[in-house]
Image (tube, rainbow, N blue to C red):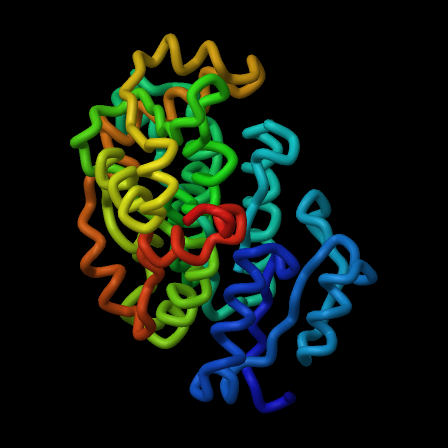
Length: 306
């Protein structure tokens, strides 16, 4: 252990953190190089204890406390300023400790990307503000920025749903059906990208790594669903409906309505990643990335659909 580099992972008990730990431990190159220290707010909860059994050093800390792979959590408090401060806190400490490679989970600044038109996508802009802070205020902190795409896991139960009156599986967004702007990402692939960053340190320093398998259009998303779940599609039907942004917004909880609607509008206008190619990000990954077809076929929430 003492001969290994220490890889510190914030949010170690979450899906992203768990994916990173699995990828690092399963590859002999990284397993022999890194000792993993997982940061969590409760080292006694079952997920944390399970990590200990896998040889992970589990440490209690809170990003609210400056003294205590960095993933901040906007949705926990719906507070952009709070998330930004969390990100700055951890980056400041990393710089003070002389961390040799800092990987921050970032996103694009959508207010800037859209020229102020989409000004309420706060969970993007807050992360982008931390990235900007790291680049400008902590230039001596060697950093890479990982930008996760649209979670495939949000589709079942949240986006592709049976219509209550007809039973037809319906996918509805304020996005043109043929606009291939959805960067499809299985959160379980996080570790594949992070491992790629660690194994390509010099190549990735100062760069953004885009975490997605493929850009897809809403029509493609629903067609793959129909292809995999053939009997369900035949019996009940499956379709994509483009809806006006104001109608889409009306179905959302008020606290997130503006933000979530603008987030979806982004997919068909300025682009989740500003329409940047995924090719370079894929070049550092040496494991197959999960396709949407594979996800649909194996997703437990859809296990009863044929």
